[in-house]
Image (cartoon, rainbow over the protein chains, first blue to last red):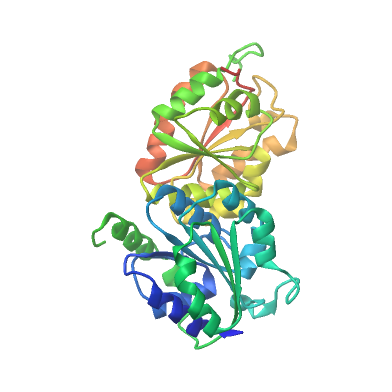
Length: 191
Length: 175
């Protein structure tokens, strides 16, 4: 199992400054603290829709890689998205699942099927051509470089435990400013 | 609605033309019995439109919202039951975030010439009141004359970055 902050730091170090990252809830708060950027999109609007937003960005910007940091609780709410994404087959989408086995934002209650659900297996069965599991930092660090270069959609299950706790400001997440900043950054200017 | 008769016609080709004239490039759909033959089937083979098939209608809300950031207009094509199933997604993404989610919604089983709120079917009766409660603009498309509402409605949705529902009240005739 990997500490989430350490895992995300490894990922952040491999991404260019202009990388678009779509992140869900708890992972989103960690991500924006570790790697602030106006090109982080954390406004899913409703739990489960982070992956759908990522697919929309991938279709709308086929020449840009889209990195998705999904949550296991979120993905369980929208499992059909695995099939939808595989069917749309966006070559530019990398779907990381930040699997902590809990609804961390809602009191850390366990997700159904905790420890038994095979998310990478479900992604493969849904039609993702490349699926991976990472449970230790050394293997992740070795594999992340080539994974990010592969033709997507790529699915990578990250077995995580909470690490350092970063601010959880839902006002920022749901506020209009972060979305305005994102829109402006896409267009190449300041909000 | 008394002037809309049972034998009034709604042509799918006219609807699709209006959708394309509105700048829509992607249709995000889950088959709806009202529009499956007259709209979705021809859209499948239309080279000017990309079709994204979803497993559940609320996915379409997220996909089309994200596309709007890319200056890419999309149309969600679903059944009214899927609209009802997507209320939370519409609440969070379309309404509270102010995103131009444009939906074309088949009113399965609506009696021709009868207002949705006067339908014998409970599910149909509650569609417009729910949209009104959420502040989502909606327009009934039931005859070829109504097709003229489509482009202004979609243009307005993108201009104001607000959702809109185009409610299809009868089966469009396939092109």
